[in-house]
Image 1 (cartoon, each protein chain N blue to C red):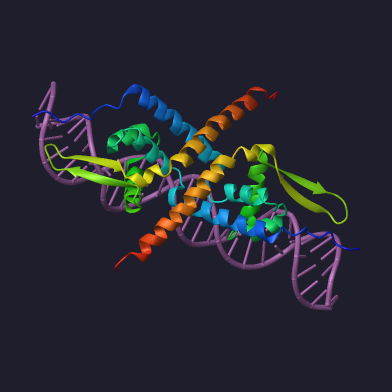
Image 2: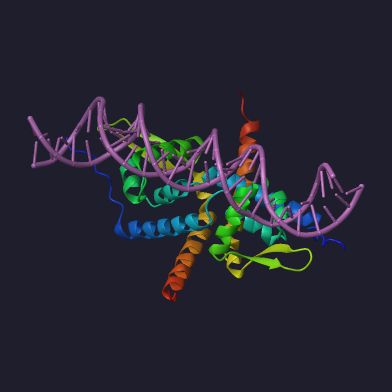
Length: 128
Length: 128
DNA sequence: ATTACCAGTTACCTAAAGGTTATTAGGCAA
DNA sequence: TTGCCTAATAACCTTTAGGTAACTGGTAAT
């Protein structure tokens, strides 16, 4: 008897799929991980000092915050401004490139809120 | 001499910030990581079999694909359909809930494409 | 003098993610 | 009969992300 064939996915679909997959993969590479987006979100809302960020971004440690800020700087999302006045103050500022992430942040925020609602209503309707 | 004060970020801003941060954090928890979104993207384009997914989602191993599919099933993004005909075929299908991720996927795709362009043009204009 | 704030750095450690290879079991094709 | 396909699973190992805690060196407040 003949084997059922996988109906082959057509070529254009496969190519479009690969394109989307590569793009998302690139995005995850640049701003994936637990903290990068969160730091950018906090900075967009006026948290520009190291200690402010540590307070606002719950759960992040100094070590991780420090290394994430360095990466974000290297990748052109933020700059570090050292004001050599008295006393020395250090501020991180978003560069315009960070704002290109706005749609991503909005979409994830909306989805996250909606998702939490869903989880909550599932839990409350459970009979266990 | 007096210390320069951090200008305190106002309360509403801080609260809105926390809300966004929590939402994004929830979203990252559910569909963060290297593979979950990618699998959903590939499935949305007609890749419903294990081996199709392995081919389409470049770089994923059988072990990881298998465990990600299980998690996606547990979290209500997909279902596993076992067709006990001859031969047995196994298909994964997206559940409607997966489609709520559409905006997130679109936003990330657009950003990823744009980001790759940026990186490319930066590399080509480098004098090193 | 002691304590605390700021902006980190360093060393060490754990947990999670992910990779590699081998194996399973049913059936097919050469 | 040997080998391949599908859809995995198991054992094992490596890598990376992230956490913990201690410390620095300057300033400022009590």
